[in-house]
Image (cartoon, rainbow, N blue to C red):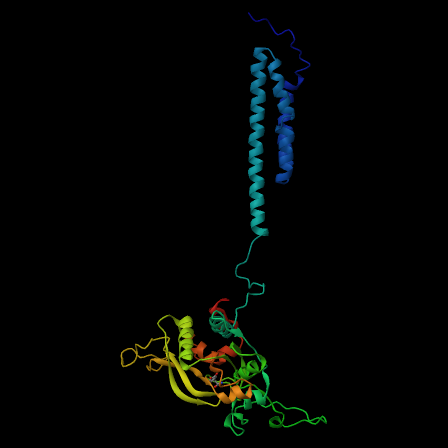
Length: 379
Ligand code: DAH
């Protein structure tokens, strides 16, 4: 039989009186209402619902009560705690909603505003093509060689076997650079012996004077001619030159190298053809054509499918080539009895035009990123 709880002490359970419980509950309500943000609410939560909060402490006292009082106090405390946690959740939701609304306003992004970050640029397609072509040869063991754009007339013309009155030297083609006489007077352009190089071929002569054969070099670079800028001409353009000098090189090596290049750049079914031509620095010399990159020859004799790129010829002219003229070898101190060589050179702008259907050369020089960007960032 159980006896009444003799140790029941009403003083100790003062905290369980209805007014006390109500006060604790109302203090919690007030603290939640006063919490102005979620951090403050977290503190109020600890103070009023945590293990040492008045209501939790009161809850612990319940066990000491006699059964009847225990039930009543239990109900009171339970209801008060329930109301407190409901009030807490309601305030929590309110403050979260407030925060979300504020964040939406504070962190709003107006996607219609122009962005002020420096936009990523794009490499110029001429640079990309030049590097691609050079890479084809670097992969075969060629070295990249460079020469100056302000060049001695001797390298640009004489060393390459241009006769003194060759028309290309005349001022309508060549930019002559004004110089100064030893006593400081300005010379006229064509007395100075200095030109803006009209092609990358002088790098051939520079390289041969600079190193002993075997020589295998590829020379990309900027060149100048006195042309007006229009849809098909520009006074500043780019060429890539190739020179191989070794024992026993023949036209067959030249042809194989050209075929390899167009296959590497345009696809495995590509090939080249040579047509006789004249250049002072090669003998024999040829014009090199490649199969039309667009129609691949299918437009020839096929009036239903004409090709604008090659004019339905099936071939596109790429540049000049030939076996290095022994006179050039001699001028550069190379023994033509022992060594032979082949060379070729072509314009990068032309290649960009037919490879990417660029119709106006002015687009290439105007520096508008709307032109360069579609070519992407190929590196
Ligand atoms: N330098 C010539 C030009 O600008 C192109 C050229 C032709 C380069 C024949 C060569 C070559 O290396 O062998 O028109």
